[in-house]
Length: 446
Image (tube, rainbow, N blue to C red):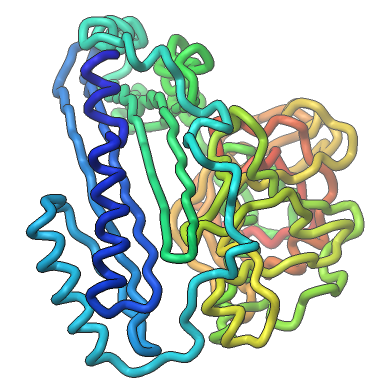
């Protein structure tokens, strides 16, 4: 076993310490306890203009305690994992909780709801054994080989990293759930200059739980190509356009919808989807799934932070809102059945038969391709939004010239009900598996 694996994985001694703290907290006055023990190791190589600019090696571990004491609740964390210090920490935490106001809604999830199939942490196949033998020199060689410098750019900044995460969640009702994964990432930002001295920058990145799936060779070249494509932007008139949003930035339009289905937002009436459960508020062709248990897929988990077992389920099915995300606490306050606390591996099912972005542009014909969002905001209560965008004018299904400093405005419900089609090009490195999206009648201001 390599030094990497020894440092990053939770040891039996550390697991035993967490179990000891669980018992100790009960003896010290807590009626119920949940403990989350987390350990991670990250290796990083920073690159600047074809050379190694920095390196980092960081090990982190922490313990979070959630204590239920005499009808009161408190959450505490520490990175000092020595037995004597933890005993003193737990005693003081319990004394603090006793001074808080009682909250009858706080509780651990029912034992039948928690995950029973996450014993080793590696059930989903997200841990790459290749990490165990990866040396510092191999990391350096791979990082340097990924550079596109010299390329005509005035600056090329890159970063390679690999990380191991190991998390154990246990509670006083018998929960034992572990999640272990590796993550390999690489990203580049490239800046180019035109003949007039104007600078244009763009990026590209990739990530994968398995090193063999990391597309590291072309990342810098793609960033350079994207930056070069931004040269020569031209102004266009404002108005209503058919808009295609590239898969790389499409989450900007879906994340607010998912947030609006979150329990805290719903309970606080800070959501434009209050009282939406079971209602058809979206177009019939739209189906969005949560697929948290797909082996080998980025972002998948067998349990949430409470230890509640995740499950495959529709979020929106044929336009109908099928679920809220309600943890134990919020569900109790809302007098509703609890679910899971959040979406995990979201997938938007393709619409319209287009495979690639180019197919979608051909279907649209004329419009705007959005490749990036620049600032702006949205109102979680009304669903209204206003975002800065950049991208390309599209005519006859082809990109004509870059556009930038435009403003897209609207309402999320209205926007999604104007969904025309999608591609089938969602990137596997993203936890939200969203393809490129095409919408009609979108307001653009120049």
